[in-house]
Length: 148
Image (cartoon, rainbow, N blue to C red; front, top):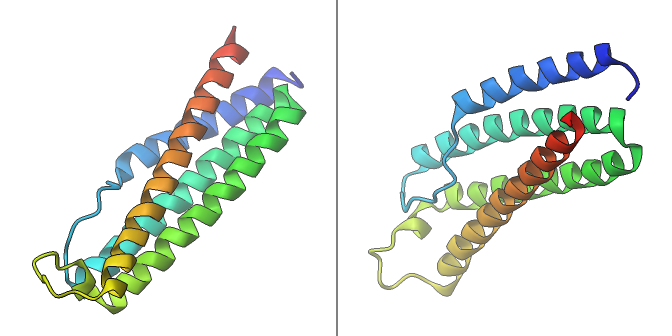
């Protein structure tokens, strides 16, 4: 490791970002709300959460780099993928926002397009959440090994 001071600096920043993330508490559950206002707010909430998550994992990558350059490069690729997945979620939510009635499950005569749009949002949302979970597991395992 390069220096204890750098490790402490990154660790402190990471702790601060972790606290901020826990305050945001974004819920990945997709709700069937056919209201444009709801989707505007939902997009804003996800965007704020996602930006903070990217900031957190970028800082985590810096911490990994202090210990293992090769693993930090792989982790950075994971961060890039998370950015892409987040953009896809926002894009899908924007489509729902433009046509919020697609989320009305009580409408039995919905078009195939509406159903596909809703399914795509659920899929992109789950992919983003799963990728974030895998990143958390990787970093947790790495951090525990590094601390030994």
